[in-house]
Image (cartoon, rainbow, N blue to C red; front, side, top):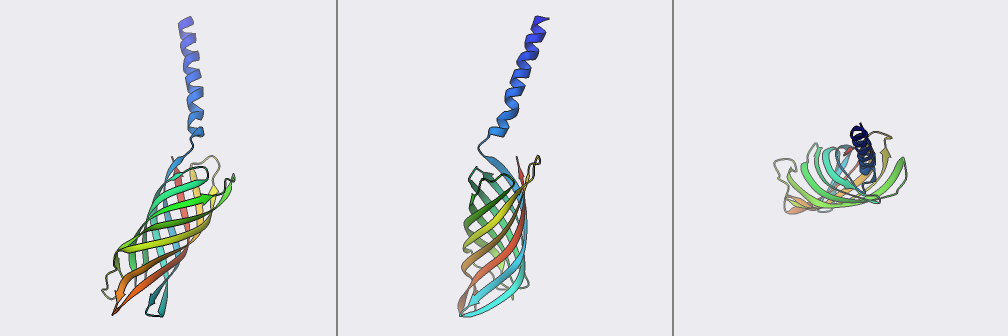
Length: 179
């Protein structure tokens, strides 16, 4: 009888110590999906052209108390331009309990796209800035981000004798699942 009681007490002690161990982690890995709507402006030899655009994507990241880092894939689509975009992003966030504002920056590449009328996009560097709010859902392992972002790519495609730059700006919703 004493062996059963000691075994039960030992198992209860181990379970009570293991349960809060996950809550004390300093980082939270996550995956997520994004959807955004905005516009694309192309700059060709002093001329500008703007269209409405949609973007869809996926993210994989690590959430640390004051900083968040992620890798991101986006598909950009408007009536003339389609592009694949891969980015590495870093965010600085405020440590507030329910709604947390953040600011971020990213560096990556635009690749494998179409600039309309059969013009292929060049693989080129892209840069972006983000500003947003994270809504933390109590008890659930989900977070919702609402953000505004602007992405710039220099010499993204050739339009006649000139190279064209792209500025993509949108508002976006991101749903993240934290492990």
